[in-house]
Length: 170
Image 1 (cartoon, rainbow, N blue to C red):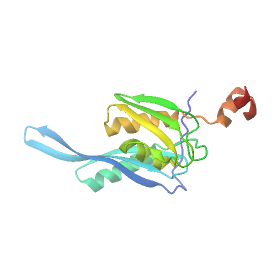
Image 2 (image 1 turned 60 degrees about the horizontal axis):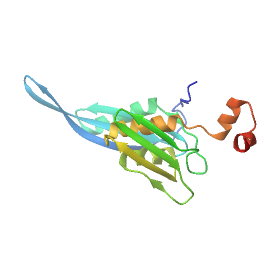
Image 3 (image 1 turned 90 degrees about the horizontal axis):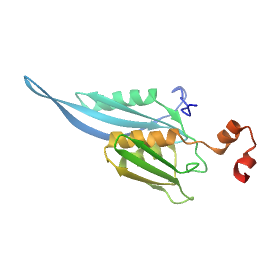
Image 4 (image 1 turned 45 degrees about the vertical axis):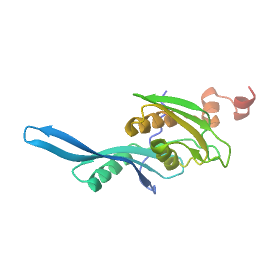
């Protein structure tokens, strides 16, 4: 069963965050060709988030392309009182991420690329740790893998065909 919940972009007020901009080089017979690569995260800070990659000859064009790509890849993430429903470990390529729910007032304890994703979702309290690769592309994808697998108590109760009280009380 797939837990990915795709979202339509209409009627959403999305805020963008640029995670990384890099100058990339293509070496050809005629010399070097420079262009820019930008990874962008968009979200409505209320459970909907997406990421995209844009490449172009100018920075602003690359960011614009990244935004368009991000709007095509939106997912819905369950949020429970400003934090995530349960702890999760996820991996993408060489990047590993660990997300753990935190009590109210803790804030977002996460590094660069993970922080942009978690704040775009609307999570206000979470403990996060990245291990392995610090490549922003892989960190964003690993964080998305963790958030995609999040399930709240209502979803689990519905899948099992029981009440929410029985999920917590056994």
